[in-house]
Length: 338
Image 1: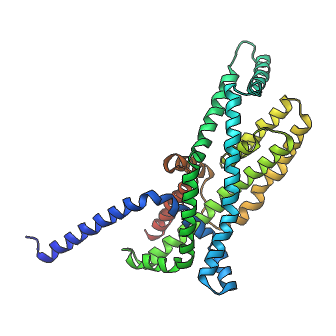
Image 2: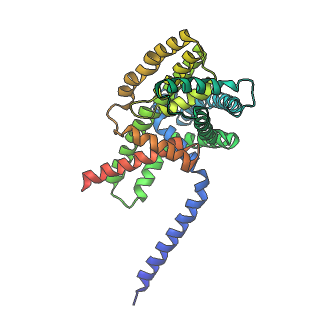
Image 3: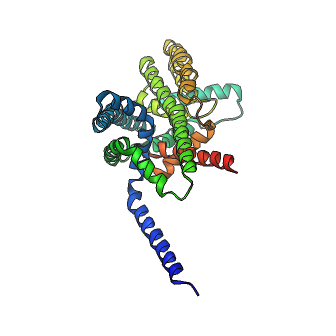
């Protein structure tokens, strides 16, 4: 027969599990907010500490740090997001034949068909349809990110509020989590430190470099006359996560397009720009940003980004790699404790 003390303990455990489950579902709609705020808190915490030393007030240092984050991220994101939507609409009109530039896809596909027929006269491919299907798929993937601009913007503002308190009270929160955790304090601290290092490695070492390469590719598109430069720069940023090929997956066709339409000087200029400004940035920044952080294979990062965007929505661009980082952190902890 179960003793009264045992029964009370089981009842308490059941109540605790029920309350925690209820809290989980209450906070679940704001998962994106916590992911973005937590990631930014880890990245900008060193800046916050320097601000604290300068102004001597934690609340003011946190406020200044959040203001800088908004200036760095929110304003460019709004401008760039609307520009991508605009150019994606133009590209969709080109694909469906509802604009004056509808011959763009046909011109490129006809040139590819002629070249292929010269090599293999007995085999033919409908390059026009293949290009349209590829571009339509790309538009769909980019459109998923910017389909809910209002919700994304509101989530970002809530993330800034959460970021303020994570910076200001983050140390107290970590101490509280360690105290209530059922694990040993040393294990909790090791998990937090490993996760912090992993997030910095993946986010700074891969995502930031991919974004920088995408921006540089976009600059090259605008300089040398590739249409819809903002849209293709966003695609190039995602392609930068693909091992070995990276941004060349977008830059090489862009160079080929300029050559096909007769802009040989632009093609040569973009090729040179791709090899220098875009290509060398990875070799220069990666060692500085990653340092001795957790090493994650680029292919896993790519799939975590794509899978994260599919599962979590736009914030999956960060959530996917963070979950991947957490998995590697826990496996590393397990490896050292076994």
